[in-house]
Length: 126
Ligand code: FES
Image (cartoon, rainbow, N blue to C red; front, side, top):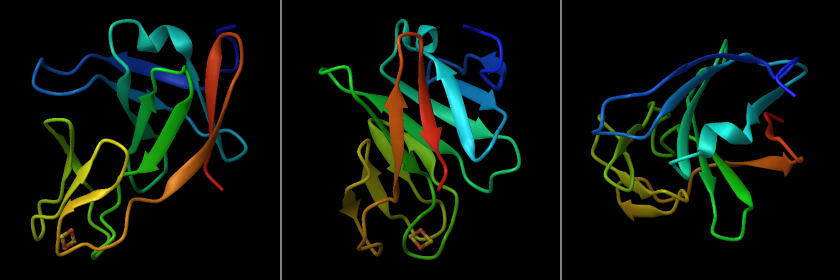
């Protein structure tokens, strides 16, 4: 169902990065329609009023993982780069599932709980 999903807009980024979705936050949750994953298993979610973007990854098993794109070194917004994320502040890199691939960051990205229904995936911000 599209009603009440909280999705504001879909803007396909350039071919250099994953698609980005702007989404509203309702009751500390974001709901993304599964149709957003046609053609891509990786989305960047830009939650309205939330400090950091979220990387949302669909696995081969159909399960979703969501990661806050906040560098664990000094809380800088990460940007998508290749098949992961990079920090513009001091150069840390993370793979698509939040694992550190280059420091100085040492901790993985914070993972958020998700739940899948027949037509959407919900991300819980707390
Ligand atoms: S804030 Fe990201 S590497 Fe330092």
